[in-house]
Image (cartoon, rainbow, N blue to C red; front, side, top):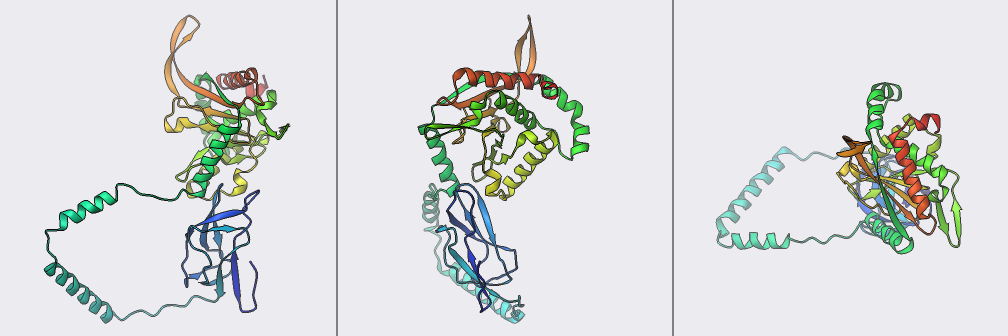
Length: 363
């Protein structure tokens, strides 16, 4: 934003993040001529990654709206102008005026009711109902980006999925035993996702191709672990990223996941929250999914799908026992990851989840 001598301030499209050069004006929060306080959000922009609000840098009157809702704008483009000033109280209308307006409205309604016949009424209702059977609305930039990226993954990657199942008994017992003390120490509940994040990091360390990506004719192996955790929102699926997740404790992992969930719910996830992921975990089980094939999040070469925990009869030695079981799915890019590596990767996840003490002793 640039300051002017006449005490006016331009509202410009801010820097939107890495490789993002344009956005859509999704909603004007404030209207032309309305007073805005400093740091108060005035317009909402939507990119193919995130929705963000542009705040006022000074207090004053919002003026000269340069764009409309639905317009596409580039970084640095003029959105509006704020004329600096202080808020003034609007004069109140006399009570007599309101009373006169009410009397006038009552007379108009009375005249309409007396003159309008009732017979056409059913046809009008039927017509309105037919018109509401379909509704055409433009796709949001986020939804368009999701559609483009998912189709890109199908068209570009040699995507395959391998499956396994995991007995959740040991992990559920450990979680129950330490839930209270963990929450008291870390201020957040102990969930299953942190265990899967840690198990994934262990497996990625053993099978680095699953943590790699293709760039032209080269393979880029990542020696760091930025784990994306897929979160569903009303606008679509977003994937905030736990940066350097291998350096996080269980408490830090759970706290960050909880914060991402809160941000996703109130729409405050930033572009930086979702950039730089090397591997993704998606939990369809929270919606009741028993089994699915997750789609890769380009340019990543692997995504782990968690599912609903369901009690099933399982052969334990020569006996049949009822155990809490979860199906796991690993979708991978066969251009980088061989089938043996993919299967072994998923088996390693299974081994850790079925005996989480491995994370402590490094076995």
